[in-house]
Image (cartoon, rainbow, N blue to C red; front, side):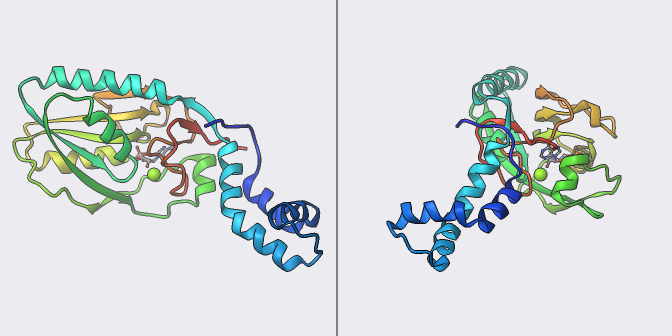
Length: 240
Ligand code: IMP
Ligand code: MG
């Protein structure tokens, strides 16, 4: 996919909705009509609005890590894990939902007996709206709460906790404490991305894909207001 440069997507949709001149050609093209009746024009535009919004929104993004770079690094991490746990079994515990894609790629690069599990967390306190989170990050000092526990026993297992990004460290600090209470044999953290400059609690990943600057990123599992998780590249959402 090709990503272009900047557009304020919601604003663009509003402009296009409001502007007859921009609606009319699409109607003629889509319907082969020359009517000035706005009803069908708006109807046709609405049927394309979601697709149009998506194209505009993706056009804003700047690629930070290509799918090839990610695949190469995930392969290296998988090889490292395979070496470190040679002759043993591991359990990959993915943090929902962002780690789902990383977990599925990483696990396939690990040549060991393994199982999967997933854990869910959310944060107490007032999470800011997505625009605020994009501009300023989220610096809550609040607690993290569990929304989904693991399904299988962790006792005596080699846990590899898989997370999309290590940011302030709140989430992984909470999860590390929670999982260590289950008395695993060993506990390691695999994080695709790491924003060390934002750390509030002293925690580090054992298998880290990329250290990145303080940018808001999406793709490869990471979301902005739940969108863009399915982009194959990791992209920066510009803070305009
Ligand atoms: P932490 O508890 O501050 O380390 O936050 C980790 C969580 O914040 C991740 O699991 C992500 O869901 C989210 N997060 C942090 N930075 C970003 C980002 O740049 N893009 C998308 N989500 C992010
Ligand atoms: Mg998220």
